[in-house]
Image 1 (cartoon, rainbow, N blue to C red):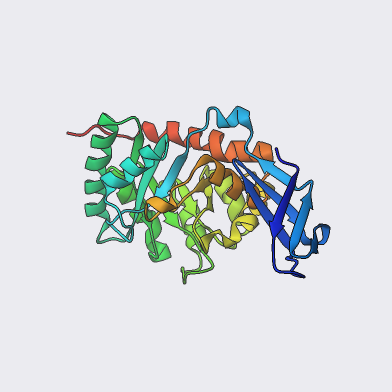
Image 2 (cartoon, helix red, strand yellow):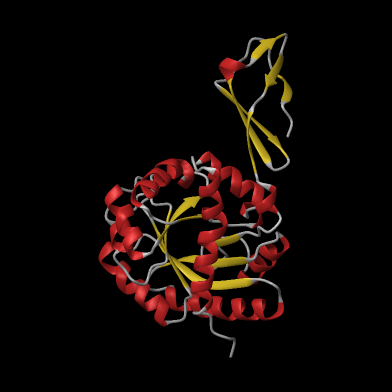
Length: 284
């Protein structure tokens, strides 16, 4: 791991902190510890957060939250699966936004593409939905219907601070036995996090711009309550898909320690993977 770096910045400019990227590491140096003379900033002994080699050797991304052109994504379901495979994914969940009207069609189309893809390629693809901006009184029934129609995975669009999600959505999702993940839950309360722990529902750390603003808060609430976390891309095109090093950096930036990161990026996703695999149905 490099211990010294030099940056060229405008003379006299000194940011509050500097992030350095090297291979699978991210280094953080407080601006107060860096000197700027003649535009050269020497950074001695940055605090490096590195992706541990023991995990790197075995880690493939499991991402349970992506979107296709069946809602507001860019790619077809089949191309999203193919792009995820090319990116090195072990598993991908296709979870397009749905309401009452679109839920049946989206699940039916998703089921066929996921079954075909994983029957021919070395990737597990889950047909799912993200119940989005639904009235809180309807979330439970929509989740039940999604599972009944063959969705392996049900995500609920949580109370992100950047969208006008109906207050109470987080709790309604956590009270449903048919919900698997509460996505980007925003300013989640400790009580809600404890409910997630009791119900076995995963809380999401988001890689999505905007939704990610409260990642640190979600980590804090989950840690206090003993709730399980996942990190998902919320990808809408191929450029949003995760790599192991990016996922590690996002998790570290959310305030997770190394052992916690291993659980969030590997152990928890594997546990959900095993659970969801029992729900997959073959293409008929």
